[in-house]
Length: 456
Ligand SMILES: Cc1cc2nc3c(=O)[nH]c(=O)nc-3n(C[C@H](O)[C@H](O)[C@H](O)COP(=O)(O)O)c2cc1C
Ligand code: SF4
Image (cartoon, rainbow, N blue to C red):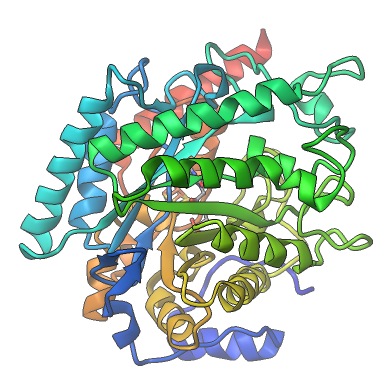
């Protein structure tokens, strides 16, 4: 592993030189045409191969419906020209919200989502031409261990005991894991939310199993007893049941069932998924590949890879950065090494998934050079879409500029982690640097409030 360093490249040649010095397996091309090619997703077609990752703003209305800030975010994403918008985490039950303002779709508020979808499609057409209509996927979630549904207090719902994570959410050795009956009951909630999403006009739903929220942690619940823990078959059971039951419930509507899942937890074995038994930072793709095969057999038509645990101490495994959030030191690894790991596991998953597109991640740290890496991965069949996370917040027009072959370095995300810091401070989040008029004051307020709470 090489020393961590911030981004400092002015030309593609400089970054290529660093790649060859580090000896990392990352490919680059100057032929950007793969970015503009339409991509088939289930029975739908995305107009290009750029996707916006789900990016939660923690800023819905208390009933879970889109607020003014949510509307602003999705109109900006839609105008930006991406072929696919993966809408942020939307809870299937009130007690599973990660914060009191997390999205949640209900019978009562689904019409507001429908209205925003219509406006988003109009904005996409106005900005990118009348035939441009992105594919819309809604991410359905239960936050499990990281549920904080009502106040500033965590109310964890844990699938397994974990000696490293339990104390961090205020649990002790007497805190029981969630029952099988509760887990079983969730299937119905995912079905209800999926039907509402279909009626609202979404093209599909994501049964989220990433970032160590409930379904993600279940994948690694080797120490859980009963039908959802222990063996691989048991650990994937709930995810597979939800996928197949949702599939049955929406059959015949051309509705896409997708899954964003953690390929690599970077959490010690036996508590981590995709984890080498001895080396925390070494990926073992055996179980993730087996999961991909099962998901595809059960009708999943779109996948997205993710990694790590944003609430733990290795955020670089999913978000390579220049500066981390408060209290997390820079890792002992160059961001290009973290990126190479993200690219390689997406490549492996895409190989396993065959024609089913897999959305790749790990691009934002590369700034204005994203298109050269994204196009190379697409051309090599290492992913089906190039996914943008923080770039979506910082530079919503990035997809259009990528397609035009020139990104503006002054608009790029600088990977400062301030948007994550706001989340940790329980505020509403967005880009503090490139959208500072809106999020600068929110960042300051959230920091002050958090420090005041800590002092108490
Ligand atoms: C503020 C913030 C909110 C996020 N919200 C979500 C989310 O709702 N669902 C999800 O799967 N990932 C979420 N992520 C992770 C991103 O989708 C993405 O995986 C990550 O930022 C890495 O991609 P990037 O390097 O392009 O930023 C979030 C990340 C940040 C920084
Ligand atoms: S605050 Fe803006 S510049 Fe900083 S990491 Fe988030 S999106 Fe990027």
